[in-house]
Length: 557
Image 1 (cartoon, rainbow, N blue to C red):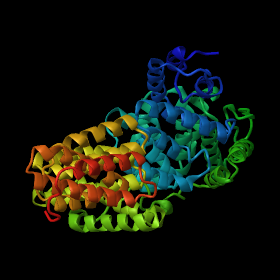
Image 2 (image 1 turned 45 degrees about the vertical axis):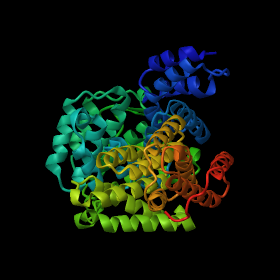
Image 3 (image 1 turned 60 degrees about the vertical axis):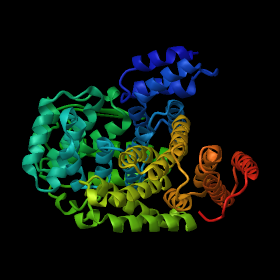
Image 4 (image 1 turned 180 degrees about the vertical axis):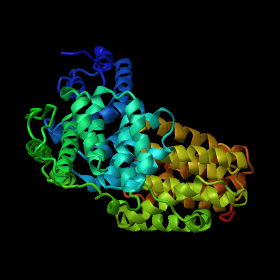
């Protein structure tokens, strides 16, 4: 059995995680044959880093083989999540992997909400491959073109990106752009693990653009992708593309012509060999039957008919049939700039969603919450009008709370860090405290315990600057900004403890009144929580005992 100390080296030596053989080896190392003993701290850190380098592609590769049951994919995902959480690494790659898996798992309807959720949790550009996969699953040609156009640098030359946008350009009547992408693809070096997928896209494009003769020439003279290097899902796509090409040739009356090249396809226990002297008509029948049988193996694993239905629809496509399907986009939302510029209105809408969700649950307003969050995200990305800076800070605080509510805790942490720095630069210590506490809560929700503890430590430092003036008003502002009883109770407990310690430094009456007010507010917030924290209760009792000694000040500040 492999020891944990050798796992990082074994993961690095396994090869490209997009290879079926590598995916099986990684499954053995991390799930089926993983060591029983617990790794040391040093070993765990090394393993987590090695896993994070390959898990995004590995999980997708596992799902692209129907030989791996759903339970195995779930176990692998859980293992990757556990290793990432151990070191506080981002879970976003796993969420994007889940989006891409919607294709081979036959759940296209889940791709869009999963992509929206992952994109909302992304601090920066969303994952290109997951976005493109979602667009293609929904025949969203506008989204596919926008995704490819937005790519820059080495990513713009990615073979899967170039081939994946061919049909989208064709559907939108952008024949020149499609041919340009095809030429760039032809001149680029395509790795063997993605060669079958690229050949599938090129064959589909040549068939549906009416260039079936050129497609047959490619089939006869180009080196065929190595079947063992491709996942069964890639082989299925290759079979569909080849089937479309042969169907178009038959449709054009060339069914009796000899194929002129052998076709060898093999995956998931299905095997097809068509000889070069077979007719195009016979080859079309065999390739189509192979594609349907392979799709059925995916459906059997998935317990649905999602893959087979889509394969059947694609096999029936004909040249000239793409135009009517080019519509809108499901991969991104673009709001009116007048809406995005109205920060006060966005703040009111965000607060309305938060209030409704607190009373009826987030599921009652999930779609409205998602739409609002997407619009606020776009709004905050615009140039800021400094005359509205206070409103924008309030909007950022409400936005962070909304992100936490929607499960986008990683993005919430990053947003809160920026908001805290902005508030401190303006001298708004109370709002900086609120932002820091919301960030600590978001980190706790995402499982980043160390990051959460660091956030509370920084909150304690900010509380150290809290003075006794206008305590009641400032506590009200703080409670409104936090919007969560448990979090507010913990924060006000920190303030009460701080003010109690200040009794010897400040005028006794003012300090005592402020401490009593913070104590009362903390107790009131704690009473609103379903299960009051016993530690907070004890800390508040200690504060009350300390305040019982000095003479109480006036009840009004």
